[in-house]
Image (cartoon, rainbow, N blue to C red; front, top):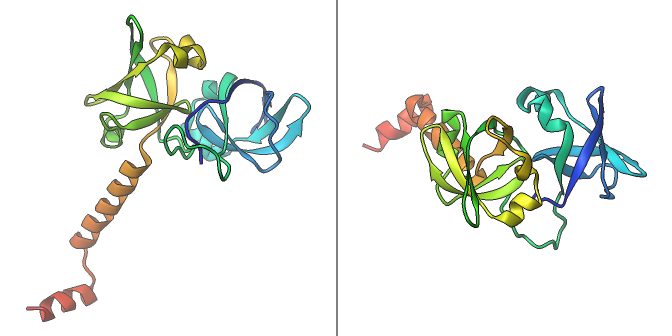
Length: 206
């Protein structure tokens, strides 16, 4: 589990046979989980100037290749007793969005991000979302977009300062919204297709 607070910007220096070599000052151990641009990956080897992680086929199917290249956000998994500062982030990417609009203000910058309309149910006004692993608050939600207001400190210390209109971003939606939706969907499916035992039980209750 992660919090969405970026600890370092590392650099992917090699990608071979599904193994990413990342230059970083972090000192993980083999088997540790590290979020790379919001993607939870397992450390397979520790190097003098970084570490290696493995990106499985499922990860590469969802995440665009450019999100696992060059400079990347890094966050080690939480340890027992760590402060909880952002929001609950699993490191499971739900979809990829596109920066639609960037509007700079006096003390903040607004980013509007296009997203698959099927994901909008899990993107809640004033709720939380992880963008490339960064925990952020959602200000406004449309049919296929949402708007974020980002303070200068966050921009200066993350890759948001490099994003442009058209940039792709990894998105992890709200964990609790997904859980609630999954439970409700399955309850509705059960109502549409009751077992004979359930039908008998209902009949006997009248």
